[in-house]
Image (cartoon, rainbow, N blue to C red; front, side, top):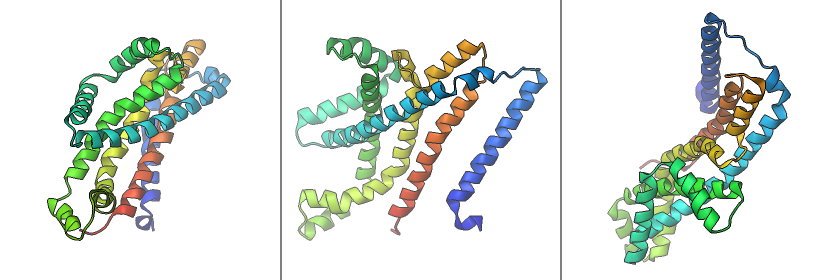
Length: 251
């Protein structure tokens, strides 16, 4: 029965793995006689939930920015105008060659201050989305260039214009090929959002540190934190697999 429902099978496997992992963790800390104290976390449950909602909002906005930005950069890197092509490729190379943490600090404390933008959430969302856009641009470009030249020639032979060739021939095939890599980058975006705490944004990681410091605990907040990230990344991965099956076709 489970073989007919791959999503259910994957869910059960993940839950089983989580139970086993949690059991091993608690057993290991029982050996060193670690005294768990969940009282401080229970008193700040709503604060933790608000931080999680802030993270969800930032990630949702950053995903839109990185998808639009990645597609735009991909088109720019293939543009016939050399200045546009060089600018797009230069941006992709610089962003991919520098750490996100450095870009966040420079973007917020230098660029955003120069532009008089003081909303840390908006700045963090933009910086996170633009960072991931450089990686998505390369994924989109690779997916598009993996389509054989014969596809373009066939479209041209039946009278398709360049726009029609992209819309009806190239993009549908490229979407299917880019889905696995795109999913990986979106999952990375969610995890990278934890670095936004350096900008003073009270997202879920920053809130967890605050709760731990208030209750004088070390680990009690980080276990719910890991589960909070799993609650976002696992459905994202499952949705991508469903899209892959929907776009799948025999070649």
